[in-house]
Image (cartoon, rainbow, N blue to C red; front, side):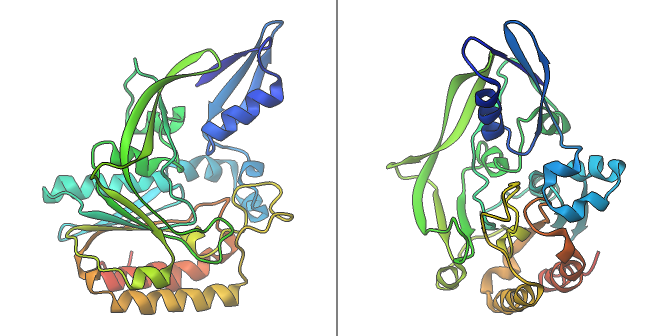
Length: 310
């Protein structure tokens, strides 16, 4: 997707800042400068530098291209398990569950360092396939829950590590609001989550201790885990060495994983989990810990949920 900015109104830096705040999981390139305009290309990331994590440099160009759309899905008795790199692919599992079971998801339990409820920017006159939505920026890691809530307003429990730089407890009723906005020279429909005083579905943000004291009485639960819940070393920021978001040593991570799994075993609602999704989030969670995670978290999670190993 290309977006044009007028040089009479924007500097290159101002245009970049606006685009990066909107299309935060896309690679943004200035591809042409004319006497009057700045022309940018928004696309799926294909440079190792975009991911920030120095260990990503070991991946080939072909592997890099596959990261945004990769997922692995498993079904068992109307239960769905999915693991992915980019978190928006978790929507595939929720959609698959509803199609094969005929049931709706009752609530989302979302372990993540981010809410993933950012606005959607959609070209009103166009209709896209799922992959096209990823490639043109409409569907992003930061707004995939917003995408789900457009048609499925349900309660959301967002559990964030209390050690995270951005943690604070929160609770509010929400609704969906739509309005038109202009980005550069292009009109978009902006769809966003807004707080409301009306009786409606609720977003809860809390840490693990508070969540353990919460009664979960829903059927058909979607348990969604982003690995940056456990460690967000980079937050996809090139200044990560100066800005300490939420990092851990491997020993600290191991202890947190053990505590997490001990909690899961004791949660009564676990037997009602019908969708289990895990996102590794390269550029946020350190890739150097993935071998440990595969063996000691992902496989164990599937066993607890009755999925077996994959």
